[in-house]
Image 1 (spheres, rainbow, N blue to C red):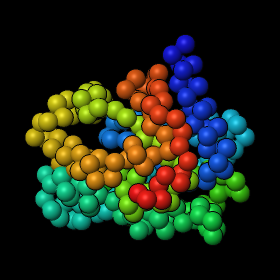
Image 2 (cartoon, helix red, strand yellow):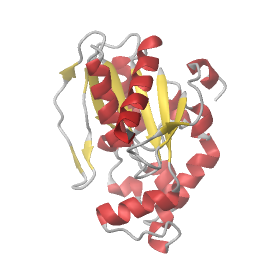
Image 3 (tube, helix red, strand yellow):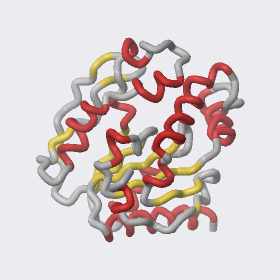
Length: 226
């Protein structure tokens, strides 16, 4: 029954996307909120309804380390301000799927683990394909106006860091000094951009097997004053 609940939520989101004929869809949330899996499953739900979906993660568009850490390796402001190359992401991914775009896109520009550029092939999306992007900070000012539909996954830092402790071996306490850069950087984002207000749909993903809609689907017009 609980798995059916997740399937039902994904169907609701897919139907909302199709109803407004959205092309560029963003899935937001803090680290370990479940964005990647949710976006993967959402793309599958769209395909099941007969619409092709292209999956891209903003994690393929990090700045080089020299930029990411220019304010210091422990700087929350550096995490918030310097993590991603938004100009490159817009040029390689968002603009091609825009109203005047040619649907020719690249999935990545840099491998964050090796800190090396990625020579990603140019791919061409089919007409009618929906772009589904996952990543942190996707409701910040540089990106919010690009989404035709967006989702924010609500998960507390305590839950998220418990997941990362199990998955990645990180310290489970979000207030631990080793987590300060990331937690405080994301708190800056939450306070500055209020992504729950900017999103079209907020989903509590504390239990990823049984997510629940927090608020009804809103029209993208509410972002015009974001």
